[in-house]
Length: 89
Image (cartoon, rainbow, N blue to C red; front, side, top):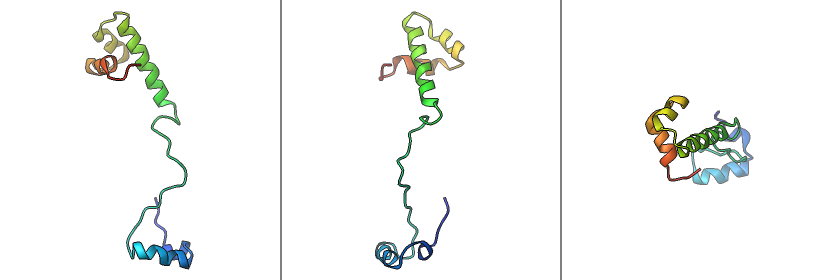
């Protein structure tokens, strides 16, 4: 993020209006575009959801938690969070 001088980018009437609220301070002006959630652009979120569904299916089919953990290189605690989590897949 780069800082810009208000006097250089804002029309004089708008600068005076802003100075009524913030005189000499710094303000953050957010982008117009909406922010995209984590993992939506690169597919990470879908990939993890698919992995978790597969883990849950293995568990439902009787595969022991320690074996699933070894298969996916995850801790047994992580596998438990996936299969016993509140949000069912």
